Image (tube, rainbow, N blue to C red; front, side):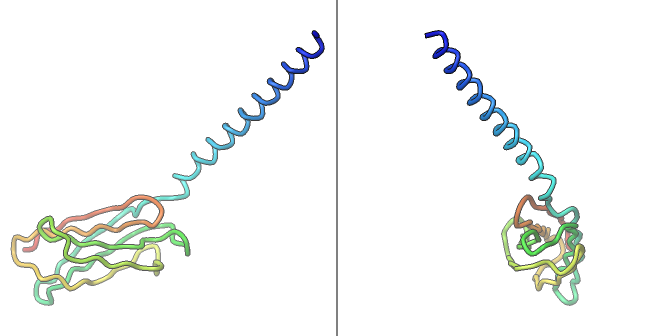
Length: 127
């Protein structure tokens, strides 16, 4: 009977050790994911009143076929007025012009969205 109990204890210990190693491995993988996925680091805006256009410059250092800025959204005075979706990112820093009708005092906000994690926004008041 003692031999049977010892074998059972060994099996339980081995099972516990296996699950522990698997759990540690899983945690390590999950900890590396945020390092690999990052939100855009900078968004800057310039508004051209004469041409009624908003220039949005976005910096997102990691750009691959599966990790890029997939969407730029623009709000005017708190209401979304434009959304542009993309299937790739041309460079780590890139600029797009968007036609936005705005007048003095309007507040424009652009947000760049990473396809994997996070977003970055910037605001500008029209002068």
